[in-house]
Length: 429
Image: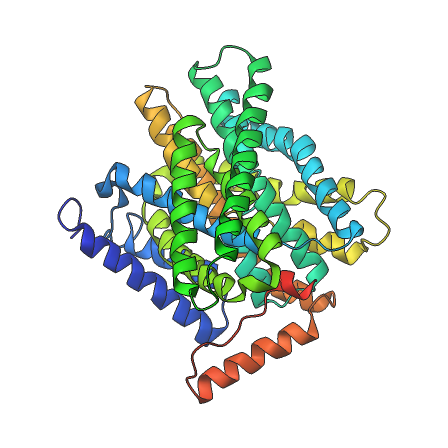
């Protein structure tokens, strides 16, 4: 029995319940929440019990996913703090190394091992370029990773997630014939990324001017106004510059976070809770859209491609670490292993598969299947093993671990609302 086309309310209700149940299980068992969210999505979706079919929501799903993803990215930008030149230099070198090395490497692996055509192999490499902040943030907090590495991983995801999505769209336009030459790719990429970031930064600055003039007891109004501005920003800019809403959301979050600083404590907390709610429903919903028919044709070649991509990251991180004496071998090993893909990657792949099918070209299902296989393997393997690796390498922050353990004990003994969650980036300040 499915709910296809009959009751969207029941579909959303099932997705929310399944996601919250996965979060509860993760809290009680200590298992990685992102792994359980994906697992429960597969269980209720086409690959499992077939209770939820996201395609029945039609075009409304795409719009809602875009807004919820922008909320997650805005929350990440709001809390992004890169204190110290060494940390900033590490992030810059890692991002540049990923763009210069991981992009062509991913395309070669997708073509040679997974069998994608060269145009779609480049699209896959761009989609897989971004590591998901929706996955990395709860992962590094759950393992209590030391702030210097947590900051690098979260910043990498926030920067490369929108870059990868915009680049993938431009490369898809090239594959579909909407662009005629390769020399059109870079100007269009810079226009969408730069235009989105600039408009987002200006919007964030204007929003701060308004928020600063509201009374201190108007916290609820500040939240409503922030969400209204954010959603209008993203939906508006998407009409002019496709996919530019992602860099705009990040840039707006960074500006608001830096300008408000300590004044945004309550706003930060509420935005973080809403972002977590978005993650809780989006992961199961997007995983439910995956069928075994899209994974099985990839066979061992698809698995080999993903594993090769994970191992190839070690070489990329080694190149990124050149000239950074403060980055120890244990730091590089940890950075090499933690690179899960998340919601933006899944959403972009689902959208692109529809565009490819609409254009009458083959390979859309294989592209989507390979992207979701990348998400499943990276989240599952790294979600279970990264905490163990962090402990073995001595990269667990004792203070963060103690605070997390104390919060869990307090929640179990007495149910007191309003506990403050200490983020790894905040600890890095």
